Each structure stands twice: as structure tokens, then as C-alpha cells.
Image (tube, rainbow, N blue to C red; front, side, top):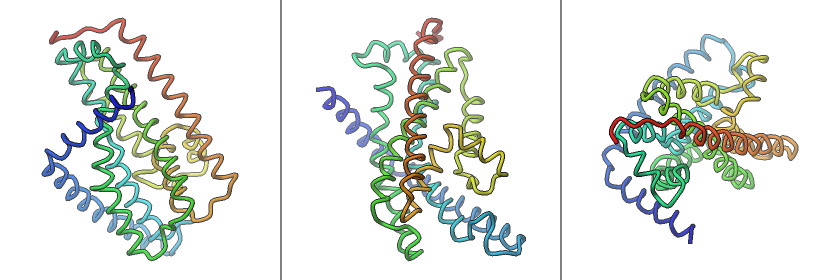
Length: 267
């Protein structure tokens, strides 16, 4: 019965997302402009480097990685922080807490519909175009199955981080600046903006120990590796699973503790 309730929220999310098709179109156009900037920026970087391979990646490898990272970002982005912040500032959070479902679960499944629409409208078309244009850079095989598993864990980690940041609004009553800082940190340290291969070795090893790289770098490394070594694959998925558990527990405990000092301006 619980699954039926969750799927009802997913269905409602899909219907809501389809009502704002123009917004989705604007996002797609904005991403195309961003990718054009990325193309010429990295083309200039490789030209100034004077070599076809920088830090083990060719220009084609870097561009494919960043294009797929952008598509993955659009697919997984939930804007949960803004939703929590608005609910707290308006007082709607009180009504949400009275629902016969835990708020954290309710919020996640409310956004699950956007995963479905974003997958078919952004990530899947991008994936097909990249696979067709590059003629083999993306290898369809068993790695796709592990990629799906990795993406599911990446969504959980990303949502947990968003929920933690959103909970901070209970203390600050304002979320804009904190969320912008969170987005910069996540996009930088996850490899979505710059592939981790370009980080200095010491800094890269430190970043690999953080949860952020499990959001984008881990799924993409699995997707772009046609024949991943079992040991390397197990380590990548194991680290993701570890951060899934850790971030979920932290977000739940932080929310539970923070609710004790909730103050609502609108309610």
C-alpha cells in the first residue's frame, strides 16, 4: 500500500512537470548555451597545453564527460532546498508535518515525477546523441546496469545533502546564500564542472573521500568504462553505498533535532 501512495506522488509530479513544458524548453536552451561555452573554453585549454592528452584525458574525453555531467545534473536536480525554505518561511511546513507520511519521504517522492520527465526530456536524448556522434565513446553493455545502480545511489546522496542544507533554514529562516554556496561546492567537488582528473593529486585524493564525487563522477566513470575492473567497480559502488547510509542517517538525525526549535513566520 505504501508503494501505491509513493507512485501516486510520482504520477502527480509527472503531471505537474508536463504543465510547465516551456520551462523545460528554456532549461534545454540554457544548457545548450552553457555547453557551447564549455566547448570553446576547453578547446582553448587544450590548445594552450600544446598536447592532445591532459591528465590522461583527450579533448573528446573531457567534452563527452562534461556533456553527460550536465545532462545528469539536469536529470537529478530536485530543488528540494528551495521547497523546504519556502515551506518554512510561509508556514506551510506545519501542514506538511501533519500529513500521514514523514516529511522527508513525502518531499522525495513529490520530486520523483520530475526524475521521470527529466530522464526522457534531457538525459536520454543527450545520451543517445553522444553515443551516436562519438561512435563508441559510450559503450552499451553491462556497465549500463551498474550505471543505473550508481545513479540511484547518487540521487539518494544528492537528496540527503539538499535536505541537510534545507534544514538549516530552520535556524537561519533564509536559504538563498547557503544554497548557492552548496551548489558551487557540490558542482566543483563532484566533477560536474571540472573532471576530477584535472585536480592536483593530493587534492583529488581528498575529494575522492568526500560524498560529492559519488554524485556525478562515480556514475560517469562507470558509464564511460566499457570493461570496468571488478575491484575498481566494487570500490566505486561500495563508497557510494557507504555515503548513502551515512548521509541518510545524518539528514534524518539533523532534521529530528532541528524540529525542536522550529519557528514559523507565516503559521
